[in-house]
Length: 118
Image 1 (tube, one colour):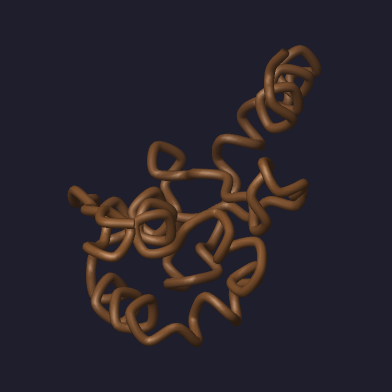
Image 2 (cartoon, one colour):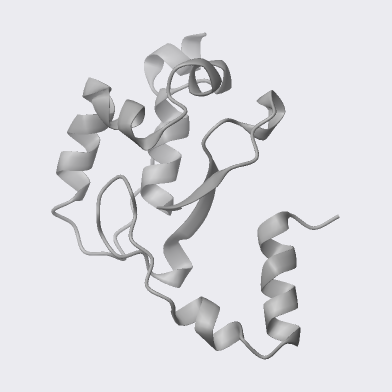
C-alpha cells in the first residue's frame, strides 16, 4: 500500500494538478531554505513505529541529520517538534552550518558515534 504522500500525489496527478504540487515553494522548517523538489523528504515528527502520523517536509540533508543524531525513541519522547529539534545543541550547530549552503546542497551524513555504538 503506498504511503499517504504518494497517494496524494497520484490523486493530484490524475486530477491534472501535478504541476502545482511539484512546483510549489516549500520552506524547510529547520534551516528556513527553499526545498527543491529533488531534495524534499517527508519526516514523521513522531516516528510511525511509535504511532506518529503528522509529517513535515524537510531538506533531505536536514532529515538525514535528524536520524543520524537521534534514535526513534528519542524522537518520540523528546524531539517531536521543530522547536525541540532546534533546541538540541548538535542540531542547532548543524542548522547554522547548513543555512549558509545553496538550497540544493547535499552531503553524505554519518550516524553519530553514540547512535552507532548503542
